[in-house]
Length: 498
Image (cartoon, rainbow, N blue to C red):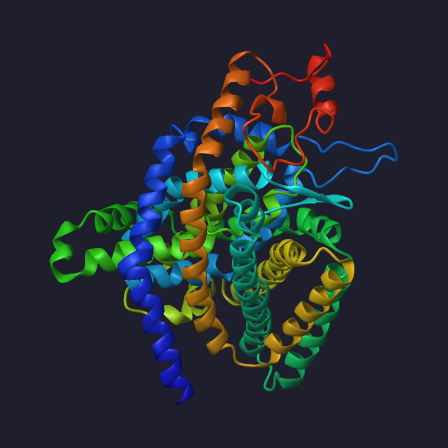
């Protein structure tokens, strides 16, 4: 069997899984979670911004007891905001037309309710390890459903997909972006540059990930806001330069989204498929990745980090993905039919058309930041699952070393097969996690009601496990564990919910 035929078989399996099962499960769970949470993703927008700035508690030495809500947010954003926001959106437009962007927005809003549920569950069932909390789907599968073996199966698949395959892909993207920019400015031979980049990227990754999650958090909280700001500014410049095209672009997005005449030829279904699939791959809502880091935040109520991670879906899809869409659509009137696998080149071509050589170089810098922080985010995801399998520190460090080696290999080899396999495993992970959060969803809905009830009393919500004594295997929410929050709330100077 040739490599091309193997890639074709794997691609067909992925397409079939999404077409016949994945797409309907994603849509159905999104609607179900939205209804059961009372549209939490819209009615609690102010609470999301309040929760994200809440500071983590400190111990007697002045060290935070775990990561803050904002640090956990930036780590998940570093993994979410990857090349999918640039290449994936361009691919969605090429496959499904401008209307695919509208359906990406719709599914982002719907699936953000699933993001709330999975991150709230991760907080509920988190566990303490050294100086941080740990949690995620593997943990709430074991503690909520009572099956450690199922948790291990999820952890193994997840490590292979996110921590290894996607890390290789992101490393390869960094090298491609920088060497592509070098080609654009006239560098004849980029072979040596590729090897230098591979070594530098490997060393930087190793220095950060071997030190652990707190080290990743320090980098993420500084780089992610810069990365997002640079890309948003580029998008605004392109929009301003082509502001007269605004009516056409808005008309294309909305007109194509509701062009039901295309349904007869199958184009309407292809458009929705492209929007839903590429959107979920980008924002990861409900996929089981974000909860691995959401569990690390030190917050007073599980629902708070659920709200923070819901905000992350909006940052990823409503803002960052929209920037890519506008850059392309403001530049090219008809990008439909372009090669969906050349998404980065399509975005780069749009920036070059508007900003010349500066656009190509700026995008290379942004992609480098995006891909590098995604590597760190994927490490954080993988760390939580490695520690679920074995809590030994030597095992965690061995995983960090292996991931660093994957960064080097991904920088210098073709990763077509890794991408194809990762695509299939992502479908498996998504379906696995979506079924689990439906089974455990009632617990997240109860926590949301508990959160809402305290806010109605004018209180800053605090959860204590004795409030819901029927919940089993809850480790980190005793009265002693949250005593600092209770004391702060009872103080006359304690902040009150708005």
